[in-house]
Length: 129
Length: 420
Image (cartoon, rainbow over all chains, first blue to last red; front, side, top):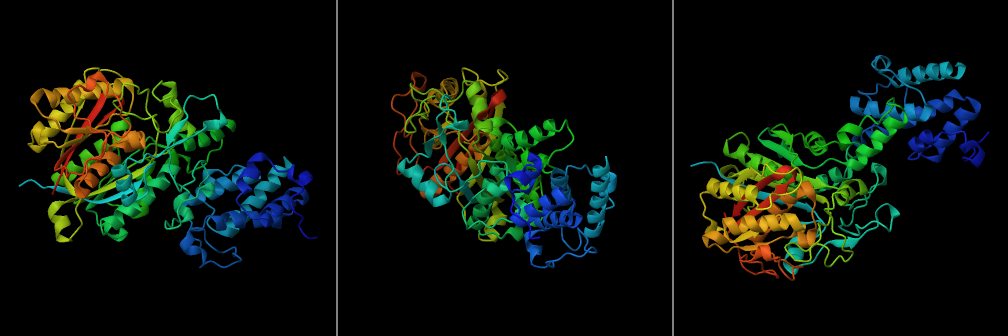
């Protein structure tokens, strides 16, 4: 199924804080988030996380990173995102997915895969509760 | 012979121009930078005029909303931790670096320092603290602190340019960037630094301007042509303004060795406080008079050596009167009659940025050989009796110029620039 544009009814699923945090992103990213919300499509959640990370890659580095990030890509080394910008990216992820990521957990998130898997687990726990 | 300091570069984002040429033209021709504004879409507010910043749109805390002239290339990772006045400051530094014929790489030589002055961004701080409170303290943008608190300029600019010398910020309200200049001069005189970049910047937002209306300090005059009229009997408060100004000063031999362009010598400075009120100047201008005396002493000059005074005068009833008393005591009473003008009649009052903006105006006046007038002054306050207040610009080269600044808590600063 082709992702639909955000309709009025599906938009109502999105919290104000998530809508504000996703406002700068393309409609494709916002649609992915809606797909995650409505269908619990975890690959769609991955898409949103990757977009947030890419948004924090320094301008000089943007042309050097592949279009499709691998799980092995390190946030600081390969993507060039410094620790302050990682904090900002994580804040956006927290706002969008309404989760809290503790400092001790953040310290272990070195790669794209670390973050993706961590968030999937976090969202699964949140859904169960 | 003690080390001397020279002014070698200037940068401007001001209500009267966003480059040196435009600013000089506005000062010469008496073109003001005011426009009507309706803060918070509230027509009932008495504050209806500000000194606006042209060609920039930065009215929200979100850097993605900002627009600025295309000749400034600023990466998103740089914008992300800036506030609007940080954006103005970065653009003004870019001008000053080019003006001083420097490359940005030369700024990380360890001999270059950076002193900044601003009140921080109350708008950006408000934005982040609101989110913090709404989430009962659980969530706040992690760049909220470095993009908003007083010090945001030095945090961002030192990192961006790789400055490894003295870096710090000055907070004395409307005298802040004058303190920054004075301390920068001391660092050069003491041999601690060879080059100092001094930055003053402020933004024009409801959060930054309207609290001064609550203090009854702002003009309620809705006419952009007359709202800011320092020293005039009819003045009724200051007109808020913003932007950024940057001055680069260098140790004289160091500057001469590299063939740097020179505006003027930064000859000396002095400061003294009123010890009187949290907000209002001493009614007799005692602190400012002391600051002027100390500034003259620092330079070894006499009152009669000063050709022009760029006054702090913001157009408030109490402040201008106090300043006039200080000038009468230090100049008129000893038979000296320097020309006196307040360029805030054209720019409005950009708070922390005022000192370095007006010091830069003085440097321009010396280099381009003119004395700015009091363009909106019609009938001087009687406290100004004996002061020489030209209305129009004078085509005459001032040799030695004093710039004064006064801030809350009675902080007063004098700065002297002269032909090099």
